[in-house]
Length: 215
Ligand code: TYD
Image (cartoon, rainbow, N blue to C red; front, side, top):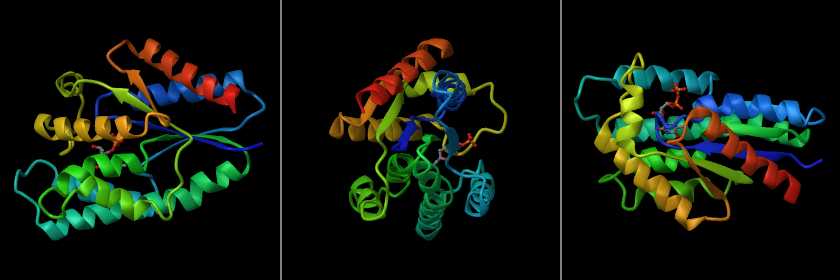
């Protein structure tokens, strides 16, 4: 049986992580013969740990990081992605599993596509061109679409806000995601993330079951 790679993407606060848990549980129930692997980026592996520590340090002091620091962050996200592919995603797919990844390489294109502005020309395309020769393209990408100001309101109550959670920044990330989705409409399925969590999960599961029954 062929494995399936499904990624969940969207800005912070769009409800991906909550939906991912519901979707994984529901799929495991509906398709008991098939292994469902729920995974995420940044990972909890070695590079992911370094990355989270760096993100936590960078949080909140308001000073603009150097270009070198921004590049360091990009390559940590890329190294973490490479590690995720080799250690988790590819081996699981080989066993025929359905792999659900809460964020994947598109997050790097969308987020670092903003942080790298002014350092490299057309950063989204540049990042995508680095990934292209070795990355595995998802079978489907569920894009959780939510207005950035609504996402931010939802996050006000969360503890430990991260540096990527500012409105202007999220607006630019959101634009990148929307542009990427428009360029690959056959891969990106847009999910209206404004609905309540149950409806969001339902819509996402429907898209995945469609994909499974068509392939
Ligand atoms: P997130 O999915 O929010 O992790 P957590 O479960 O800790 O909330 O990811 C952490 C932040 O990293 C988030 O703001 C998005 C950002 N990010 C990037 O900037 N580039 C990437 O490639 C990835 C995977 C995440």
